[in-house]
Length: 308
Ligand SMILES: [Zn+2]
Figure 1 (spheres, rainbow, N blue to C red):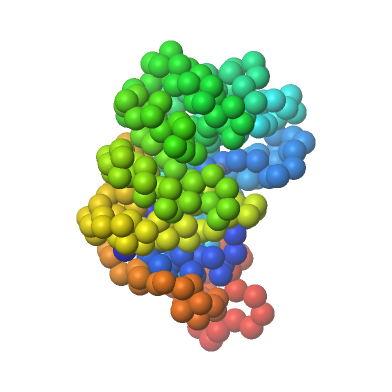
Figure 2 (figure 1 turned 45 degrees about the horizontal axis):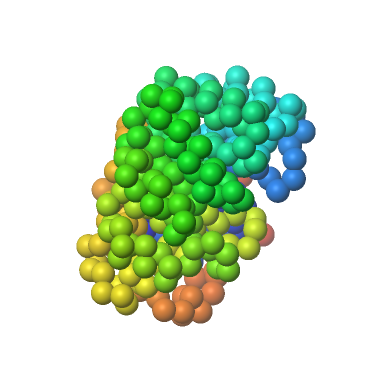
């Protein structure tokens, strides 16, 4: 099974996660910019974060055999904070960078006028920079939030095939299915979608335009949920080709619209089918690709360095 996780916040995850992700077949990820769990207090905080998303994090991922790309944006929640909004002026210089394959995540959190403004402006930026957009849908008021999201996208003039609407579930998938937008589903350990519910949606709507992600971050989440969903699909009678469509070819097709996606020639195909993550042998089993490699003078190693 080869896996492209199109929404995961690796900045919040460990090297052990990278090792386990590689073991189950994850070969590429997209990390959308989002909030920290507590408020940022200045634009400088975003700038350092964005620099890490195009610098340190892709380096770190590469040490574990995973291609890392990112999406850059002012996230919906912080669009309400006047200390943060000026970061919109910083976005254009990031949207031209190599590793940036989308604008995101944008959209609604509480559906305020401030969020309207930031959302519309960032859709404009996506059009100007010819980039796809990753749109977060709110966790509260999900139906009205998704409807309004679709209205704003329509009004913006961005082609729907350049938009993915994320965090969908049984109650919102029907709204998006005929919109022409791509459909993203975040699979969590104990809230929102789980692998079996995802399989039921795939049975009803098919695999076309469907992307599955772990949305793993600093909260209770699991970077291996994509793999578990692939296994649930196979157990339910979907073919290997169906799984490859959802977990690899669809995200590749969506983000390739940026013209900047680089998943390599040898990507994927050799992830193990692992029933129980304990079978991987815990963390520490995978040696970084280039143990002595550094980024800005720093490596992923701690303590004694191996002989080079
Ligand atoms: Zn997210």
